[in-house]
Image (tube, rainbow, N blue to C red; front, side):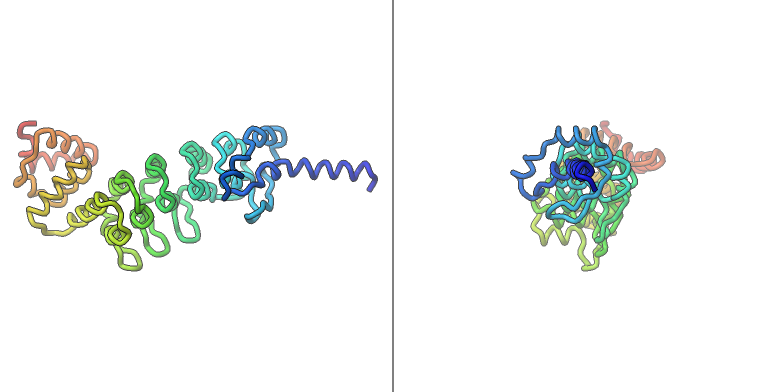
Length: 302
């Protein structure tokens, strides 16, 4: 090889590693993450798009495409979008999993869902769906809501130890807001009855993990509703609690599971109106007609 050919080969090698050099940072170190030159990454990819399709052996990690490394570095959505070439997306279906594990923004999650819509149903080695991962990594409410909008049936999926997303949320969210639990129960309230391989329900796990009192009370109250017979006093307390937190799906569930309660509990006019509105939202038209026909006391004063 002539000196000129050696020079060309060396230059080509340096150019091929431009993206590597920009992304080869320690994703576990906040100061290192701040060093990421977002504009430079986008500029290199625009000039040499083939580099985004290459697989690199980055430090501290097995070989991966730049897209995965950028996700780990919590790069902004503009960088992630630039790196989402077809080759990179076909290389992996775990971009969403990695994004959730590394606290990606709502915009990044939405972008990856758009690029890989079928990835939402992919499971990892533990049989975690994307929703399980979101619950495990304490994703914000807006991201959990986005995932549920895209695949509501995910609430029924189970891990290798038979945990539903509700189990995982109760296990990991020791400082949880009530809203995430409500969101999961909204879609699949029957999850409260599910037991995992250790015989634990979500309510059992919540108690063991000392989740906030309101969440424990909610889970316990919903668990009670699935018993065939309950004392009127228990139902009244449950109804009162659900009205206080304004969870109308729960109020509807009380009437669905124990319809006789409508004849024994006096509801405020505004509560009746909210209940009928919720019934219209959660029920089919025929189901709503059944509620109104059988529980005509609900219409009094409305």
